[in-house]
Amino acid sequence: MNDVRTAHLIDLALEEDAGLGDLTSRAIFPAKHRSRAVIDAKQDLVICGLEVAAAVFTRVDPGLKVKLLAADGDRVPRGRAVLRVEGPTVALLTAERTALNFLQRLSGIATQARRFADAVRGTGVRIVDTRKTTPGYRALEKYAVRCGGCFNHRSSLGEHVLIKDNHTAAAGSLTRAVRLAQAAAPHTAKIEVEAATLGQVSQACRAGAGAILLDNMTPAEVHRAVGLIAGRATIEVSGGVRFETLHDYAIPGVDVISIGALTHSAVAVDLSLTVLK
Image 1 (tube, rainbow, N blue to C red):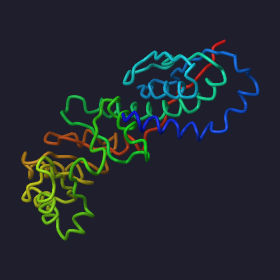
Image 2 (image 1 turned 90 degrees about the horizontal axis):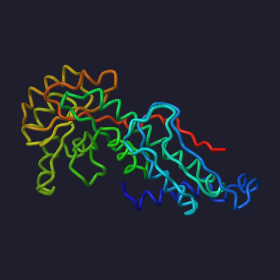
Image 3 (image 1 turned 90 degrees about the vertical axis):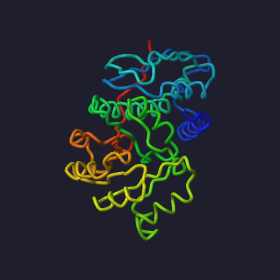
Image 4 (image 1 turned 135 degrees about the horizontal axis):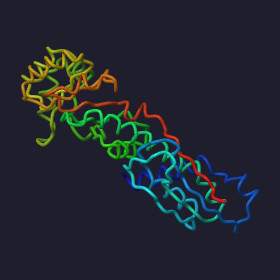
């Protein structure tokens, strides 16, 4: 995680939710009123974002004391408490929704990632995420993917070369795009090429691509592409892969399957904060 960016996101979220203060809590509780509360799981889940949630509480009021009762990446059963907080009641309740928003979103991604990671265990295939993330939240969401047992693809356009269909179209041909990239990219950069047809797979191999992304191919086409590549490049499968069809694509020779749904379609999990009497 990027601590500076995370701190900025926390400030933005608190300004959005509590920039004018918590009118309800301030109307009911005097400044010296104190409470204890726990956040617990209302479903089985993989927890992620505990330190972010803790930072939300202490950002609202450093006098709030937070104890983490689990660690990011833990499988948490329904009913288990994951965080305890105590201190000024107004501050605790002001921070509640923002802390839960971070925790529920990141735990939803981690829980989704764990399903995918478990599904391919023993196949040798890595499940990776994509750049289909919430704007500004990429570092956190990719951290959640790792907490769920999957892996990260590139985090930005500057990390490695990935020649996609629009690059190929604008360059005039796949081969020309690869040659231009090879001439300009750092010598340490791996050149990855998106291929939507077996003909493009052959072109990418001849051009010397270090990795080939098989885009929206059927499992049968992936089998044929693996044979054509014959170990000359890292093989990534992407597009059209659902959880239900994951095993159809996790075939020998495939190294990586990228799944945008790890982040863009993850559902927030059910966690709640309860004030203890």
